[in-house]
Length: 390
Image (tube, rainbow, N blue to C red; front, side, top):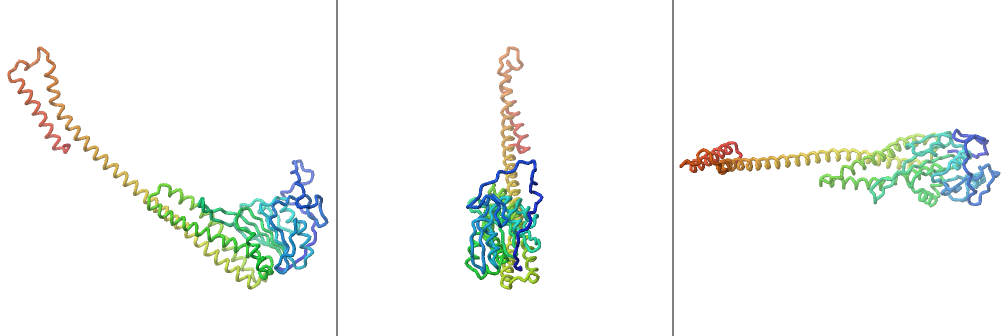
């Protein structure tokens, strides 16, 4: 990217700014920070900007830090004073005022500012004139809950500046800055080198996530064949995380190829081209691994469903066999109850001791009653035996 010098521009009003004299109640203006004056300074910086979102701001020349301004206004002023310098401003969840100040100073496109304010954007690469706007989805693996935490990073890359807007814990840009400052020959290549380092850090951050997910899948496979009843929920939750992971990595492949397609047009340094190709290879490998994870989880879920169905069938079969055995026992008990009921009925009738009953005075009455009981019992036994009740 060619170097350019800026002059203060007339104030622009973006669609989301309130016009002067609007009926809406204005937000209370925060006090100055780190000794910054409360009124607009001569360099055109807006007054009373709450700069709590500024993590680090530095000016570099020849790959070495030549200034660490204590405010955005001082950063703008130092960048104008240093010939051939580059500003690297890091922000974490900045306020609207901070982004509007940067947009005014570096002529950032209003659509890119809207995206940086709202966050929740898909990974993409847009070029607005001399400025590149890159959205990345970084990721980190949390061991304790076994979850993947996703963060969003917006990067503005211009001829002599890099602005990072972070909306999550990942990636660790302080480590990226330390790495670049320890290799001034790489940092001397300019803003595109910083963009490479940020891309490389985001992609390298995917490696622990891939390892953690692979370990989770191995554990899930063991739980599936062990019959753990909670494994289905774990498969579902990990599948959802892989969908998010896929949304974070897949667009990067096209983004990096688009960036590489502009090497000749924008005169990218050859060494930097090699670095960016290496990042593209890593992204492609990670994207393929994530696709493989989704396929594996789909297969595991199908296997788990099959095993659950087989287990349910086995349980139903066991219940049916238990019910059959119970039915057989009930039939035996019912048959013996019927056999024993016949003599009980005869004995009960002849035990009522009424005066006028047939056969009470008959000589053969008692033997006849005993014989009748025996005949009925034997008859019932034969009937139940033929029906396999006994």
